[in-house]
Image (cartoon, rainbow, N blue to C red):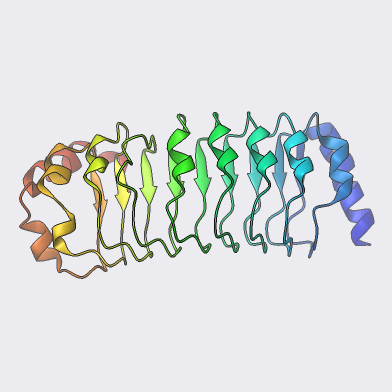
Length: 238
């Protein structure tokens, strides 16, 4: 029954360019998907039990949206970097401990969700993604951010629920960063330097649940300058 169900989905996808195979209890990447390498634009394999993605994924030359959330992935193949048209990649709620270097080649990627994995290091590959708008690294095990973060192009960076104890001053130089979420980490008040508060483009800092009280945050050197940016753009935020 499951097999015929998959074939039916794939036949539909040959016409529509979108294949929805979520919540089917799949334990492997369906081989029949290879019939769609030239025309598949959207692939949803979320909420299955898939432990690995085969190298053939790199052959899906027109893929724009991939959802692999809520599976059992521990790694991604190098061939993922071949998906030059990919715009959205969701990998939340897996078991990833690292990402392939080739991920830096996803030049059209706009949203990348890596929430709820097992990453201990900030994946520096993402700093090469020039079109990246939103990067979600919440609910991982990241303890430190790299000093050279100024290349990161993200507009919104979500680092909630990690184990981060410091913020590099290079955040000040991130050209597009407007929203920084660092709730429920291990940050002391000294992490928010005058430079970050005064000179960055960040207009929304979500900081609750760290090792300081909000009164101390409100008294920071540079808080007034931060609030000016926040007030100027608050209409864009819910």
